[in-house]
Image (cartoon, rainbow over all chains, first blue to last red; front, side):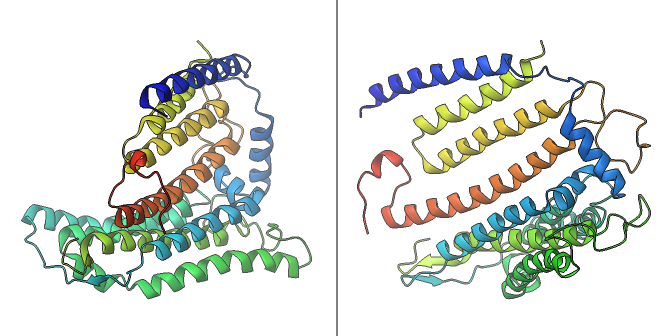
Length: 247
Length: 115
């Protein structure tokens, strides 16, 4: 198909799609309307189980099974990336040479690193209370570690980031989620049902039954997964070379 | 204009589709896919919006004192973002393998299958 023909087909299809979408938009409930039956019920259920952050309650209590699927997608795509970006037979591993880092960059990175790491852990720990949770905090904590790559060099990052440990951590946190779900079955209710633990006092760290546990498992899983993903991409960019020395 | 946010989502989605269809670089195409996906964030959040409402988090407001936006679609958006990020990572690693095996990232030059 020539480029010109392709553009004509695209314009026709795009115009049709746009017309259908716009027609659909005018058939939707008005923006900012007051009728949200699912939302109202989710808020009610969340408050009944003393979880202050309704979104965490939806993710780790009412839709905990869907979050299991989401976690599996994360786990599988990390697995896929690890397999795709492995070192092949015609590649060798070079030793990256440390480069001079500008002093302000080094200072800033080393000052911000602990602050960012603690913020990430705080966001994970308070997932059931305030905005945030395992997914968001995990990303913050994992990327905080990589400030060391900006502030020092790749070898310093590799020293504080043993990939084997993070791979085990990824698998452990994924199974922790499953085990917490299975504990519900053993206790005589249902898989991932939030009836196992006392709901605690509203708006305290231990409130919400199994929500904090599942949230922590997800936080660890996401942090480990991001570290592994970034490590694979950084390895390709920094360390792995083709045999003739070309990168 | 109460349909404007929905139309914004449509516009973002179609922009992403245009980019995907005319892309000459697979990395650019992965970026366009991310643009398409961000249309779904806008759509979901627009569906859940309630005029004059606040975030559905009760750590600093009294339950029942103020209307809150729909938490279900916000949770769905969170799922959407996580899945989008991981799929982007997987696609980028595929692009790296294609670039190593075929020496190009232009989809038009990747016509025949090679082992």
